[in-house]
View (tube, rainbow, N blue to C red):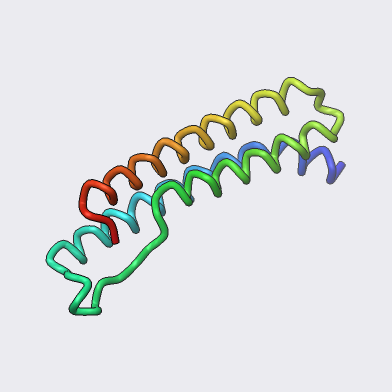
Length: 111
């Protein structure tokens, strides 16, 4: 009974965690950009946060763990395939964001 409740609630909890992590990532990266808008590295006061791609990778990891647990359960493979697809999407978005950040760093002169 507890196992069935856990397995039926897991996708909803994982989805909520993924959304919360990505929203947090957007908030912290935009807040850090606004805070450090006039900051130069010589001042030494610039705050550094994780790149936005990191938050997408964490969301993908949560999705892959959810897919693995659903794959091992009695729910069948269709749920696991859907969650693996969602996780792969977040991996693709994270890698695209990484390339975007690297290109921006290269065009800005690198730091």
